Image (cartoon, rainbow, N blue to C red; front, side, top):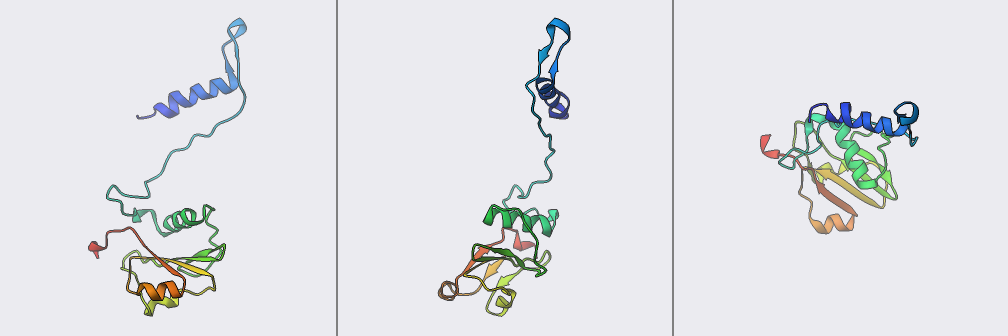
Length: 148
């Protein structure tokens, strides 16, 4: 809608807050404030896959927030560990240009002690009994792996 929101709607809201008119036609403002934001690129593409052009940081922020409902702290230097919350360690096993597979060989990405481990990866080859016995939950990264 071009600049409608910024030029017209935002100005109307400002007038309600600050008041408008002069003399006997003056209308007192309601007070308060508002913020105007422009949205960035979408996180998911129309096909349901992640918009990888946003960069790894934004993807990590999204996964952390969707799991914990808290802002992403990025307090770890571990390349795959997002963080730990309420006894659960969250891992984002992601490489922009490679398929990641959670396998017995790749379990070394789990570097912290937790009650439960949630691991995001492109695919998983570990059987469900092993996963359950070790409190590992696999979640598939939504991206088009056919392009690799």
